[in-house]
Image (cartoon, rainbow, N blue to C red; front, side, top):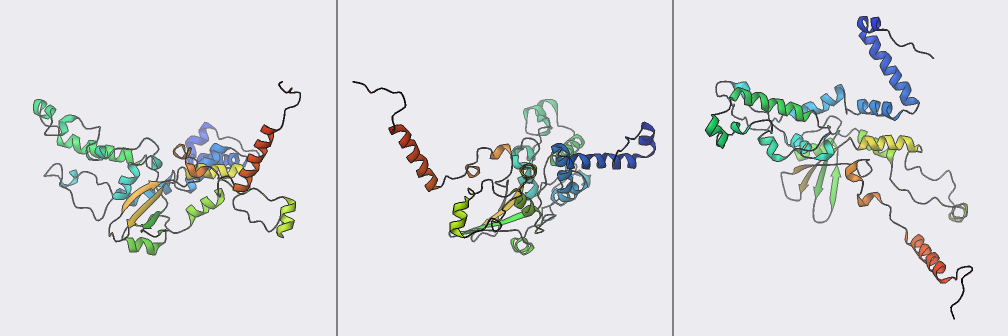
Length: 310
């Protein structure tokens, strides 16, 4: 089917038709194996961009249990500084959930966009006078809006309970209620687990030979498929996992209040996990011994054409 590209007159008169045409072309490119178009569709579907991303981020931009801060301008109640919720603070301070480099804890208290005069105890404030309060309010809110837009929202929060004996993780709504924290937009729907299932493990055991299958009595059709057969599709979802941060709420045995941390799935394709030890498969002992025996045999056997020294 051949689609004619819209003219400039159609773009001016029917902008919705142009968006539909561009979306159709992008879907066709993704079906034809265009990695960039496929990545765009995955980002829309999993809230990495578009309206869904805003819906996932909106609850994190407020903190219902936070104490009301004093307004910067006493006579203007709307001049209160922005509040960083514990979830948003953990996401901003981690490199796994940012499209740019992470922030520092100091920059959340005193944004780097503010001049030194904004601190009334600074030398600049003593020499040049106090900084404008109205400008300080605008700069703080501008920095808050600028930085949260660089955050990749998580799909769910993982409740991790560590004790001396065992460590457990749960993503159900009941676990979130017991922990006394807020649920995320896709909490407990199994969407994140579905992505991990498509990717599967990074390494799989060596396939059995025909002789080994016959001796064990397992047929070829009985072998379980642990990941998607298409390597190209697995790679695209691995890249998606690198843009899906895992927000973890860890509580230790006997503690009422936990702390948030951000990680990535061990099967994600991200620069921070490039040299992670879990990404390298362990060599089976039997195969390791066979390679050692083969190497010793090659070292002990005389080379062809070599002469013995007298």
